[in-house]
Image 1 (cartoon, rainbow, N blue to C red):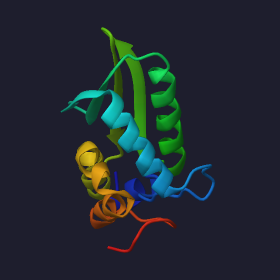
Image 2 (tube, rainbow, N blue to C red):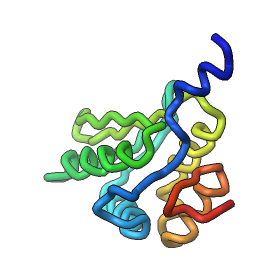
Image 3 (cartoon, rainbow, N blue to C red):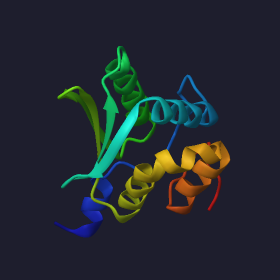
Length: 138
């Protein structure tokens, strides 16, 4: 397939939270709370990454809701959330695009960066090529 045709079929590699009910700062804070309260591990998978959480009451619904909101603003991601052996697994993968893969790698590092705050986390994504109305220029 012609490279230009393939590129036209990919969703844009942007984060557009203009229709979101939360702000980028609130979303980063939500990730910080989720990871600090329930994250028990993470790994790379053959197609992307996996976050593993304790299966606390209500956690699967929280993670599914967050994944749905992420997909709404970052259409180049695909997410699957499932329960497995007393854990909640959140799998993430991206379209076949170099910038998208760099952003996925940064998403994998998110548990380490959210403690530094909203501005630092957003700048790290921008440095990997993520753009959108709420993101700083890299």
